[in-house]
Length: 92
Image (cartoon, rainbow, N blue to C red):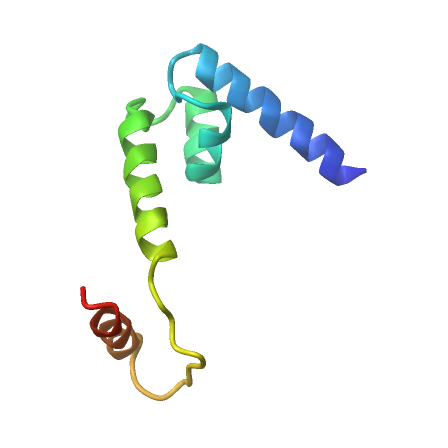
């Protein structure tokens, strides 16, 4: 029941933002944070140029989607070393 209600609310917000020209596609709202959505709704957003932000996040999403991750990870070492390992493994 809650899922259906949340889905209707998000769909409504997406339609509103698209109609205002803030986003290109209703589903683009999923590339924004809750804080960004609230700020847009309240008129307190630092910027309304969300299309560029959304495009950058889409590109990041597609980039990270292509990475080959190790089969397992451990808590040894820093997260920076793990990131370096992933980037080297993907020849980036």
